[in-house]
Image (cartoon, rainbow, N blue to C red; front, top):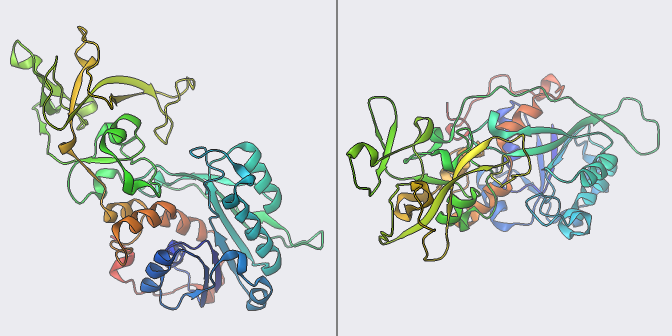
Length: 397
């Protein structure tokens, strides 16, 4: 099988093809990030690098009998998390390079991935692709909430115009593997406030700049609790002691639902070194951890809102209105843990600096989701690996 991958990144697509048990004869990759290319070539030295997608010679590629063309065009101009620049953003316009190459190369199968976006942008992409996308959340295949749209199709058997047309291939539902964030940690503890249903929030290319207090308040940068909480006889997890007068029983701080929280609590004006003041509140949050109080169908989630000044909140009779949180309790996810969230092999990206590892992992695909999709192709028998010999890097089980 010959594969063309545009915006290839660190080539998670090749890992997915191996996991899908599909043999690749030639893998052509278009990528401009030199660090991502370095990781790709370290893992797949036979990859044929094509350079900038805007300079790809599609006519020459059309002579190579490409079976599968796939890619995830840059999403910053489309994303709800961005500024909704849409097709006026130069990064979004790269989608049209994808479409133009698709028309000329005319592969049997096509896979385009992108973020959740406005209906207007989605409809424009669907118009050019010729069919609607399917939405999948990586949480079923991994320990991460990552909602993405997939335009997955095959060349139509009946062509009604000069231009080749494609039709959607239905993607079967994924079965939840039951992996939670705690399962992928090297050490430490995943907490309610840093997860959603036990899953991490969506990784981004900016994770390297995660700040602990912003992570707690906005739930946009997942952090890991370093210390081990203690379990009581009734199954509650004790995580700290409140600085209150009275019997010891009223000083104990427990996590809801028997899981470790992100905080220890104290009452009043105590200000210890390396701490911040916040309050515990209930907010309606979407799968990205973004506050959506107007969406009444969303359940309330307990979270900590941290002040970024040196003031305390107004003292009240409610203990949760003033909470002290130590930043020494927290650490960022390691690059290896981020690889596991994207179901990449352990240390797959360890050929470059950590900052570059975080960036390319956050920009990449959840490999097992892509493998699940690719298994849906009606691949000819000669392209199936009948007795694959797996390198230890390609599987964790």
